[in-house]
Image 1 (tube, rainbow, N blue to C red):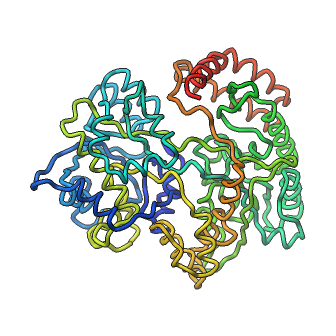
Image 2 (cartoon, one colour; image 1 turned 135 degrees about the vertical axis):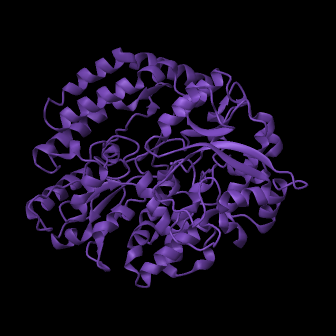
Image 3 (spheres, one colour; image 1 turned 45 degrees about the vertical axis):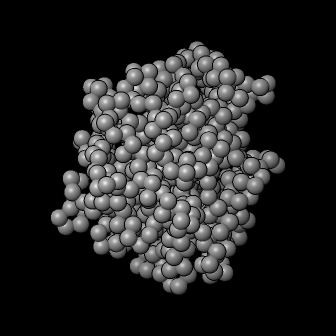
Length: 560
């Protein structure tokens, strides 16, 4: 529930309201991660193994990303605050910031810091930067320091996926970074106004044909009574991984098409999903919907929030989105303390008899690296150990790390002050939460995340309409309730390439994506024939796609 990140503002607010006090490098994913269960003895072991030895305090520097939802208690700041004080007191690590940048400038500032060889002791970087820093010999091989200072709990926590995420941070057998991990098994779904379905006597959507039919009915019969009514909410970056609501990646998935992942070619190799024939079929369907007026003709200039205004204002009754989407829908669903919109969540419908497979990644796209000049790399590993403890099974006193010195939830988002955050790679929220909420049995809850979500959902059950969104996420018919079947039947499509960007990928990927979006948009908006897709495929190959495919398959052959 990993934080320019499209969901950062939305999901930070979500976490504030939910009181989940969770975090890792990417807030969009933070809002959906869960915590491991652990015994008090495990907590004590982790704390003792990383605590202050003989009163010695070591100092580590980093860089920080300011956030509009982080509100300091009186007298506190980035330079001096209760979270940093707690780390220094509990594990003997003093945290300083080399610089602090606004979220809109942070990534660019990181680039400048790397280019000027002015690294702090540790910082968060993307996969390309991890590779570049490794090749430039600017960061430390963490193999020995991690093995020596990481607790058994930490090592287990970061290999719950079998070690795949840790493997992505290794070069020639050397661990060069700590994955800013998150649970990759986070899916997208279709959210529909069920009150409109009932009013118009429409069935629940099971196929992509149903999606079109429902869109047509919503537009033609206009149950919202608005002058401008459409069928499906779409915003200007619909194919981006960062668009978790008003996007179209899930629409593609309904046609067994996928956005920029590497999939089996049927002959033991990998191909890029962007150029497969299933995409052409999906684009043809979108073009047809656009021609029928089922998609806002101004979607290409509207960001997520602007596009979502039509959802809030009864102008659209259907949208593809992530698990946390109800926390955005609540803006229209609850007004003046009353629930005025009813929404249901459904698995991605399929174009045929085969189940749609939501696409997922590996669960890591950023890494914490330690400068080769750092004097106390062990301090960074101690921060890692402590975060895993306090985020997953904190003692009452350790709530200072997420709530501040008064240890009272007040929406201040003090968890953002923790400089190193990793998320759980697997969870069973979809199995536990719906059952606990339906039966009102809190005894089966296993993690702090589950307890927080249960508390929020039960507030709604008991009449607090402001928590409507948590019930639609975690309740008996919520988004999480759909996950166990998807997991059990492995009805998802996971990217099979998890290496760092290949040389040609690093050089040409941005150009290929820009060209792809240009062609996809023209087809969608009926500016060109859908056959333009075939020309794009040939151009994609010539612009570097063939060379990238060759490099990816060389990597795949060596890493099967």
